[in-house]
Image 1 (spheres, helix red, strand yellow):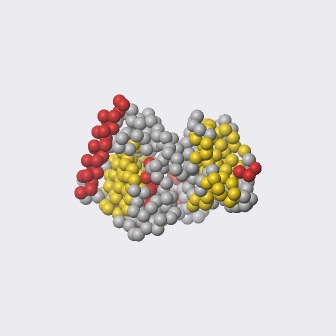
Image 2 (cartoon, one colour; image 1 turned 90 degrees about the vertical axis):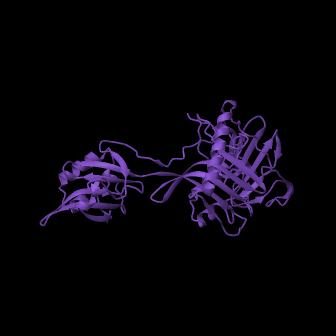
Image 3 (cartoon, one colour; image 1 turned 120 degrees about the vertical axis):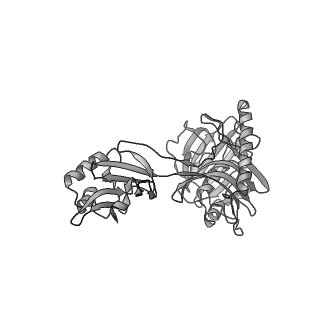
Length: 423
């Protein structure tokens, strides 16, 4: 597998399939014969009529509406099975009928059904019956953006007219370093990344080749480097993995309702007693994930703690997740879990005044504050890959500099901040 971090050429993806095959969907284009083509049809030679699948419509009834014999409709449906099952046509989807016309008759030559935002199916009735699927052109476009957070990473990117998928991608990359629910005024990021889409719609964010995130007066740099064979892809400037042993938080929460303390008055018993965990207020049913790989040592009702999952991560760290409404699928004593796996759902079981997660961490069997613990790093870049990694860094920074002064650069400036509730 190549260690080069990227190709900055715009990528088109034309997928091939079946005999009644799959091609790239196009905008109307004039070809050498001076006809205007779309989906392989010289549309200027035909009369077009468009419609939408209505309630009670079937493939056969649409064709019958345009005078196609039942036998022909059946043959087309059979041919179509390897491309698209006509039983799956959906109410509200658009279709386009193309007719050959004379002074006395009108004959359906093609029917084009919009199967999804990304693909259409063309039914050919002229000359030889055939079915072809066309996929719309997917573009992989390199972009560079700078964003200063003013309300939240998610909301501000949307307000600025950008895809929230970039926020999701960054939150995944920085999940082990930054708590995105505690962003502060002045936090900002820049990113060099691939945006994948078609027809002006963003479908996904690809690789983020370079990014920096300034949070709480600390700068976190990140570079993309494909370690290969299921390894890490994102690293800091020193070649240390952005993926740490533990996530910063076990769920997407609304607020922290109670912190780590040895002198808290219990909301039910009213007794002053230690609370060696952090309470995350969140709606009932919010998924709770394990912050790291490990083995479930118990998953049961523990009385005051309600439904509780306990996990041993290694010889040093253990975690517990209390007051759950139910356990995740397959979660029981002895089960192996991986970082980010859902192990339960927020509830209010046991002694609890409302839905929340009581999350606890032990280091060498002593309770520690989850909000301030230092997460041990994963393995760094391998020695044999160090030279390739350094080259990847240099390439990314060079492209960043080029993009900053190029026509593709877009700086996003947002409005003044409201600090709470980052996502």
